[in-house]
Every structure is written in C-alpha cells, then in structure tokens.
Length: 486
Image 1 (cartoon, rainbow, N blue to C red):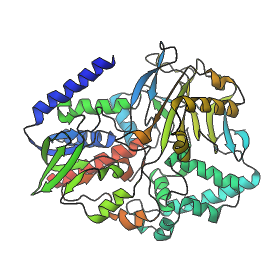
Image 2 (cartoon, rainbow, N blue to C red):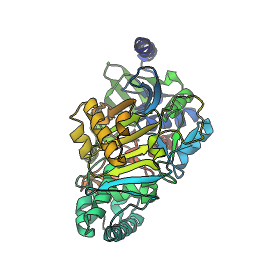
Image 3 (cartoon, rainbow, N blue to C red):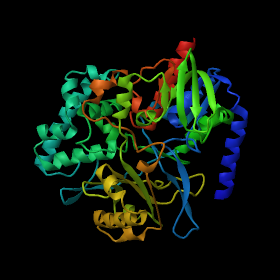
Image 4 (cartoon, helix red, strand yellow):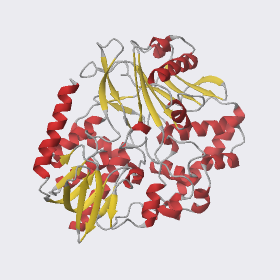
C-alpha cells in the first residue's frame, strides 16, 4: 500500500532527524546513497569508521532501482529493473560481491537471429557481425581496427597524457567518422553504438572521451556483446538487491534519507555538511558520491578550485528513456529471433530480451516475458516530449516492423522511465564529456580538494558508466580516506 510505504519513509526520516540533529562528529560523511556512496560507506564501516550517508532521495540505490509493476489487467505483476541491470564476466568486483552475497543471476537470452535496421534496410544476422553490404563491412572493420589501435594507447590514469590527446579531444566522434569512414552503413553502425552505449550523439562527445570510455571496459566487444560482454547476466531479484544488502551491512542508523546536501564547509580539518532541512553534520572527511554535473548544486566554503567547477559544469548527463514491454509468451523466440535489435530510426535504438531463459526456474514467479529497450540520445529528446501512452504505441509499431509481425501489439503491460526527469540523476546511464573538457579541466577529476573526495561511475578508471565503475569508484574514494587516516 502506497500510504503505508509513505508512512514508513516519513517515520524513518523523522526518527533519524531526532537522533542526529545534535551534530555528532563522524569519521566521514558520504553524500549520495547510490552504488558509489554505499560501496564507499561499506568499506569504511568494515574498517571501523563511524560514518553518515546523506541521501537526497527518499530511497537508496541511485541510478539502480527495481519495482514490481502491474500489467494492464492489474492482477499480474513483474519485476522491473528501472535503472542499471546487467553485469558481465569481466566486471570482476560486482560479480565477486554478488557471489559473496549469494545473489542469483541468469544469462540474458541470446539464441536466434538478431535484427538491424540501418539506412532503411531491415535485415537479420547471427552472432556479433552486423549484416551490412560487403563494402560497408570492410569499411566498418577498418574503422574499428583504427578505434581499437587508438584505445590501446589510452592512458587510463591520465588520459590527457595519451599520445595526440589534444587532437583527439578537440574533435567530436562525428568528425572522426567523417575522417575515417566512407560508407553510411559503417558510420551509422558506430553512431548507434555511441547512442546506445553512451546515451549521447556522436556530434556531442569528444573522441578522446569515447576512447577512454571504451578502454575502461577493456575493449569494444566487452561493451557491445551479450555473451561475454556487459549484458551477459541479469539479477534474479534485480540489481537493486545489491544496494539493500550494502545498507544492511552498513546499518540503517548510518543513513539519512530525503535530505539533499546544500552546503559543505571544509575548515580546520572539520567538514560540515548542511542539508536542505537545515541540519548540520560534521566529520573529518567527506565523499561526494553523486554525478559530477550535480556537484555544483552544492555550495562550498571555501569555493572549489575554478578548474574543478568548470569540469563539473561541462559534464552533462546522457539522455535516456528505458522501457519494458511485457507479453504473455516470448513469441519472438518461437519465430527464431533472439529479441535483440538495433535501429538507426527511433524511437528505439536498442532492444533486448530480458525474460528468463528456457529451463531456468526463478525462486518466485515474478519475471514475465519482456522486451526491454532504450530511447537514447536524440530519440530520448524527441520522444520525451510525448506521453508514455504515445511512446508505447510507437514502440509497439516499431516492434511489429522489426519482427515483421503484428504480435508487438499484443503486449500485456508497459512501463517506461525518463531518467532525464530524475532530479537527483539528471539523466542516464552516465555523464559524457564534450570536446576540449578532458584535456582542459580533467587533470584533477579524481583528486581530493582539501578533505573532500569524489566518487561516481564517471570517475572510475574501470567500467565507466556501469555499476562496476560505480562500486570501484566508491571503494577508491574510501581507500583514499583510510590511507590518510592511517
């Protein structure tokens, strides 16, 4: 019942206000209870630190969240991963944590033919090689070899020190395509990759940033593949379970919900954090674990260095609407399709099957057959002006077109979420950097400022933009503090 849940949240918040308005001193205050903030908090607590996490939302989890969503009949329901949901075999830390907690995950369904719609040509392909004209495939392969050669030269710790960094940072990805691709099919394939993986357009992003993004995942295939890639597995109970387990180990007494931090003062080795409600919390150290673009919503005393301010100002969030369309049976599997599709014509950029694979029995019957997908970049901007009902109708029509069927119109439920409208994320999956920012202002992006430390998936060295990156970034910030305290 929504009223009961609201009462619990208000009571939780009121009780914590009563406990913590006396301004106790903590070892560390963490701003943000997403995966970065929670992983930082857990690492500090495990080392005996006294912490407080201050979260603006009335929930934990940040850009991960999961809910049971009712279908059109209002009787049946299914689990929906509203935010981040996949993990892959080279995301070692999150997999280790999940295994230690005993969380169950299942393979993303990937059997059958994939679909692509590029340049008005609808086709299918098996495996990971797209169905392009032979000249387009040659062009694409040559371009990808060029990209991978540049990726291998990226300095992950200091990308601005990469060979030809200034030149790469001065050009957009679109400029790179104009220079190194001569067929529209190859260029459009790479545009779809950028739109789908980075949730932004090629003309918006620095080429150096995209190369850095790819390098953080190891290689391009790790980002785009399902089997062996970042989309390999789904959590049976949703990725949000990680946040709940983190908080359980941290302790609910160590978190305040529904209190945005508005002012941070770092004076005489004491950090004071003031929230919107006027409460003040003090600590020796502070971790700001929110997207860089939101950091400037907080006032600081003394003011942050100007380059730090400008770096955060120039780190916009990606544009993403994520949807889930449910069916009474996975009809696309019966037609020999994997459920995976890419398209250069919206509203949907990327589509994938998020249902249980055949033979896999979940602990509870709560995952219905579904196709999930993304309206990314310019498509999110365009279709974000429409209603959810209008998006559903358009997506059903697109599914019918892609799969050459009318079964897309047989959906039994639909849910979408526009992450651009989420006040405390500002977009998804992550932020991106336009040309010139990384070389001009990025040099200190992870460096502490006084007693202030920074964490978010955008600031990770590995798996930028993913849950893995968020956790690693939080643990890195916690390690900085522990090293200083020791």
